[in-house]
Image (cartoon, rainbow, N blue to C red):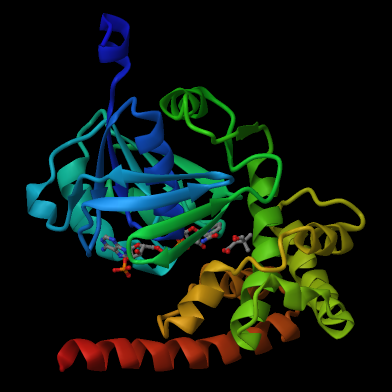
Length: 313
Ligand SMILES: NC(=O)C1=CN([C@@H]2O[C@H](COP(=O)(O)OP(=O)(O)OC[C@H]3O[C@@H](n4cnc5c(N)ncnc54)[C@H](OP(=O)(O)O)[C@@H]3O)[C@@H](O)[C@H]2O)C=CC1
Ligand SMILES: CC(C)(CO)C(=O)C(=O)O
């Protein structure tokens, strides 16, 4: 290894080894440029990682107890939004004054969720566009669904993050209007995720005419809320969003669909819940999103109870 390679080698911790964390871990391990630790509740020594035509068996350095963690250059958070608070013990051990944090989650409140756990760290919110699936406990698949895999707000931190991921297959978009991009992704998630979770069908279900009609009505509400919150949407934003979602592979699932099948709590407050809450704040009516929220919350609460009763057995 050359001096330059040694100098650019960084310590990276990925918190959360699910669809998105698995994609990040797989890419970082394939590139082989950094010392990567995976912080997970279920340790794993080796993973199978598929990306496009490529498949590899990759060794992993996983850690299940925050007590064994020490400060790193970068933390990459890839848990569900509602699990963010539970990662505080990891942040307490992984961060020092030089640590930078990339938050790979859906929703629009990345910094607000994470900053309390690492008050002095620079935080880079990232929108994730790749589709990640944990097919089996040790087998992860990453699929490209659009022109780039990650979007971040343009600036020095974005440049440092791009440099960190140099040598991976990730294409990173640096945005001058990140707020609009966050809301655009939220629009995708407030139709793709609830519809696949409630119907227990993969994205192909969105091609049904009656579902397209429902999605457009849900999107009309969400677009109005997003505009009130400051997103700079196009005139035909709802149709544009639906057209985008319809280009995704019909046999791909969504993160909420996978949680529904696995009877886990659902990431609803950060997605549909964010539309309903902002609608109340800006006095925009959101009856369809509120209905979806009520239905999803009933499923999520039942799943939460199943998880806690399993834990207490
Ligand atoms: N999957 C996808 O295609 C996409 C997902 N996203 C977003 O990315 C984020 C991550 O989603 P996704 O990867 O699908 O989620 P997953 O549920 O697949 O993975 C999250 C992982 O975080 C782990 N976790 C939760 N709490 C902790 C903790 N305290 N310590 C360590 N690990 C923890 C979970 O562990 P355990 O298994 O033990 O529960 C799980 O493995 C979400 O915000 C999602 O909306 C965005 C775009 C696409
Ligand atoms: C865009 C989509 C639906 C792709 O996986 C996603 O963000 C998710 O699954 O949460």
